[in-house]
Image (cartoon, rainbow, N blue to C red):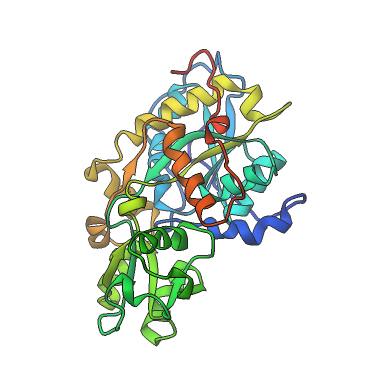
Length: 344
């Protein structure tokens, strides 16, 4: 029952993939801090047809998951016979550990993390739903207003803040620089959380930063930061950034509960289809993100996906292979979750 959907934080990390955590930490390509939830407005429907009526969904504190919370608020999951409990995870590695260990059923993740885990055969990762694809203005290399960093050719030799290596914050800029003939190997990538990047630029400890919304807008407001180049352009234009994943295999959720997966997909897709409506999304950003109304009005809203297409997500795997993060080709089509008879 959703009088108030509960959120909690899982901090436990179990083997066998604890050693992978540092690498997977590079996958936080979030856009803004989120947390909390609200009452659903639709009455619960019959759970007949779904194998598991009560599910736990791990989410990271990013604006990518705003439609997920809207689906809870509007009762879209309840209408499909699902009672969904959001579980706020500490990190990308914690999310993957959570679905492998069975602490949660579905997890939101930035794509590099599950694709890397799949390539290492950590588990049989299945993609349940596509979440967000970047638009221009979503992932941007920025610099302080008086910096000598003005264009991609200025990047070599500069210290650039990123969330972590092998994430979209370094892979996307490197892809753009490569197409422009810029030697990205000479960039000094400095790992730090997104909230620390603006102070680091203010102090001069880094020359620039790769930020995602709403940090792009925040950096411009607080620091007067100027864009150097867009990370979601050229080879990375409309790049799928994140999705919802589960684990398949004998006795695992993605295999044992195809009708539940299909019900989740339908409810989420309904909310994702509303993602382009600023009148609906801006209140979500204000309510769940630590941003004010003015910032919410300026934030670039990227594309919330309503379909799940392997060939689109394959672009991420190919990008990771191109830069040596994944060894050999990873076939994303084998990772798409099968829906039940009630699915589309």
